[in-house]
Amino acid sequence: MEVKILDLSRQYALIQEKVEQAVCEQMKSGMYIGGKAVADFEKKFAEYIGVKHAISVNSGTDSLVIALRALGIGEGDEVITTPFTFFATAETIAMVGAVPVFVDVEEDTYNIDPDKIEEKITNKTKAILPVHIFGQPANMERIMQIADKHGLAVVEDACQAVGAKIAEQKVGSMGNAGCFSFFPTKNLGAFGDGGMITTNDDTLAVICRAYKEHGMAQNGAKARFILQGVEDDLADTVSPDGLYNPYKYYNYLIAHNSRLDAIQARVLDIKLDYLDDFNAKRAEIASYYNSELSVCADVVTPKVTDGVTPVWHQYAFRCGKKDAMGNFLAQKGVGSAAFYPVPLHLQKAFTYLGYQEGDLPVAEMLTKQTVCLPIFPELTKEELQYVTENVKAFFEG
Image (cartoon, rainbow, N blue to C red):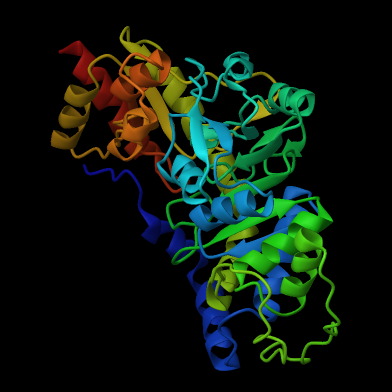
């Protein structure tokens, strides 16, 4: 038997008829960038997360860059974040000219350790950027307390955690801004790339909308007034079909070209209706893995914090023989993944920061031990049994 780490074709088969109809309608409409489809999805996503504003962009990476810029973070500022995550988290901090300051993580949840944040705060610190890693929310109550105490902004990297909750509040609604990715492998994945910024801050939303689209037109004028105090008399009128804005060639800020296309918006709009069911199936798979693997002496299964609802973007357990395990599973036709092989503070791109091996021991340990098993909603019972049988077989020698 072969069990892939992820098989997106199965989910496509489930929603094929709806998606193909929607995509064909969009192609016939002649509206491919912006317009009603994108506006409708932004509104629907904002309601789902429980925020006032959702600003679509072309990737999760851009969502982080634009959110950081909109918060005024730039040259010489410091942003505290985790070293155990995808490179984009820290890369975007560096891209806006700021310095990523890495804080070690919790051994059981893999998330940034709030107890170690305050010791890294300096007079240059402007923000905390927690990551809800593998779909489990970080300790936002503690992080927000620290941020409020020190006057810091908080940007939630929720790229792996769409739909995850602390109590009944969804991630992406707790900090100043939330950032999401719609990369195809995510729990809510497009048929290409895409991202979203969420916020309850009206001012921040205006600036993000300006920065995502060349700093132009009405949003550009409003953002310049907010940032520089320079007022402009641009009218708020836009053509009824949304295709042509007569003010699109009036530019007020140096910004980005980061737009979610209309076809992706239609796809995501449909898939959002299924998301809670998909996440519930992931939770059932994670529960099965936890139950079956708890008997293995060399396995540490992931812990879920009380009061938290994770969405299990990945199922990552700890194993002292990570590489051997991955090779064994591959021989048996079972897909696995090694997220992440190198902690960010030891990536060559960040050599200039001066970190050394041993500086952040928990994150370094996790990169040597975490193994991710297949976890997507369409997995069958037989496939799950085959996966766990082979994990057990590895430990039985």
